[in-house]
Image (cartoon, rainbow, N blue to C red; front, side, top):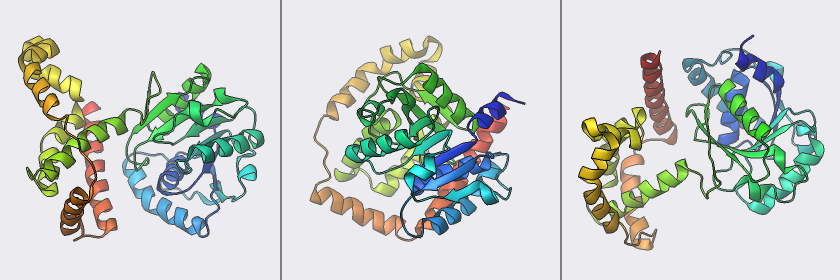
Amino acid sequence: MSHDDTVLKRYREVAVVGAGVIGASWVAVFLAHGLRVRVSDPREGVDAEVRGYVAQAMPTLAQLGAPLAQADFGERLVFEPDLERAVAAADLVQENGPERIDFKRGLWRRIEQAAPAAALFLSSSSALPATEQASEMSTPERLLIGHPFNPPHIIPLVEVVPGKATSANAVQAAVEFYRAVGKVPKVLRKEVSGFVANRLQSAIFRECVALVAAGVVTIDELDDIVTHSVGLRWAVDGPFASFHLGGGDGGLRSFVQQFGPGMEKRWASMQREVRFDEATTRLLFEQADASYGRHTRAELEGARDARQIAILQALARIKG
């Protein structure tokens, strides 16, 4: 038995709390790796909604090599609207509730009281640190962030962010679990608002909005510029590795010496205020409607997923 199989045997029973887009995607991932999943979401019709999402996600997971993506999961998927009953036998809880701190705190108090003492608690939150979420728990050492990138069944990254009280054992367990279900977990050394990937997106998008609002480019032109330059570059090397190579034989030191002054000038020019005011949003929405409005959401998502899968498969072949 491989290490991953051993890990998955330890977390055979998983509770997914909240089954919106992120939660449903996690359900697909867990089912495709042989786990039993109990979904807790009180919304009417959530059963059909999640089953439909999972059915659409399974062919993608099969393409990405998930071992049981084409298997009939049958009784391994159960819907239980009552939260306490849903987590009563869980080895692991993946929470995907609303991003409201009072809601999260109340939710974790209930989960903590109903779940087994050894259960691992993971929150998909994209902004609320584990320390804040666990402030009213009696066992905060069990809770940490397991923040995926949307959609989790395709994008490999999971940001693992422990709170101040999270135990080292819980961090290691989370990393091992996410690796076992095919993800790439990265542990952050400090809690920071928005974690890392979303902060990067926010910083880049700030300048995207500024450039469009200033009339330098349209949103279509900016999208094309990114996908034909830094998007391709960062798919294979991150910013630091890219600039290390850009420095030639001198590496990052040479890059900073040569290009650092120009970069500092650009940083200084970006200090102007950027806001989603009425004029800016009107411009963005008009251009978005004219461009993306020509296609349905399903068409856009299908094209996006196909391109992302192709990139991941190509990178896997090269690494192999």
